[in-house]
Image (tube, rainbow, N blue to C red; front, side, top):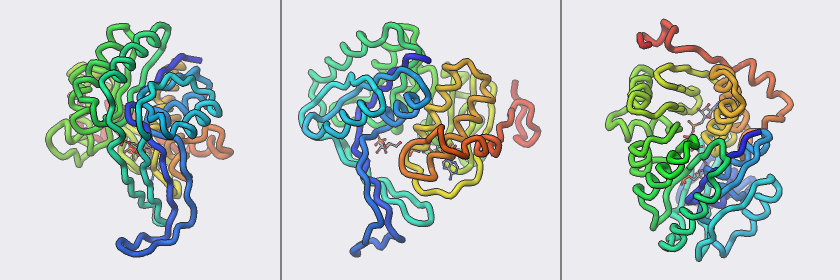
Length: 321
Ligand SMILES: Nc1ncnc2c1ncn2[C@@H]1O[C@H](COP(=O)(O)OP(=O)(O)OP(=O)(O)O)[C@@H](O)[C@H]1O
Ligand SMILES: O=P(O)(O)OC[C@@]1(O)O[C@H](CO)[C@@H](O)[C@@H]1O
């Protein structure tokens, strides 16, 4: 069991809505709705706790609607180190249609007062001793700049604690410049950093290896139903998930990151860890919420997940060390 801290600067109450095919501009009748305490780092924490790790969650939480979060932290056994800020945590709507299409409507989040950020930096310093890993996930709310995110990464690295980052846009660019241990972009997010589309496996591999060369040890590139590319210090693996029927992809990336971290923290080979994480992410898309390692058919999902080494795989058309 490892000690992990996840930081969610912009958590959310996820309103998951299942509908028939969406008719924009009309009245749509829903099949079900569900409201869950979420946000990327909290999702990562849920999975890691389920896998037996000692997990603390922190970040910035609106004090006016915290009840669902406090209850979820207690139910999942997560240590609550969130800094409270005035106002309400945002509500993000997630619309799932029968064909598996998911539409996310994500809010900006409440404005963060400077004093809350100072408190967060202080809280971080007190939490860092003894940690095995930190994951910083999600967007930045108003009042938190990309350079503040970079500073958080720098502080964690200064204590020799591995830090993984999953964010997008300017925050991803600034975060990468601060050299976290690992990053988990999807192909669109990595393309923004690269400055050009990454629409072939070769372009994706080149971009991931470039990040390795620039000092990011681990690049976990998620590619939706296509699977995952994991470039680690210049050596790349690719995983293909099993075919599953999709209900909601929300939280699949968080499940993938948590599963990968679980492998790293457990001292598994990278092949084993990536296979596990990919199978768990596939499990997650079959329902609303993060992946369930206790799913009765999880062994079958694992067996149907394929991991290959791209350094030796002739199909990539690449030769690299
Ligand atoms: N249809 C699918 N079938 C099987 N596995 C899937 C499917 N969609 C996603 N996955 C798995 O989940 C991982 C993460 O998905 P994706 O690339 O969509 O992440 P993301 O864009 O970070 O999503 P989010 O930010 O909503 O969590 C993929 O790399 C893949 O392993
Ligand atoms: O707006 P962000 O912070 O980029 O993403 C937030 C979010 O979409 O990410 C999670 C899924 O990964 C959801 O629980 C949450 O609503």
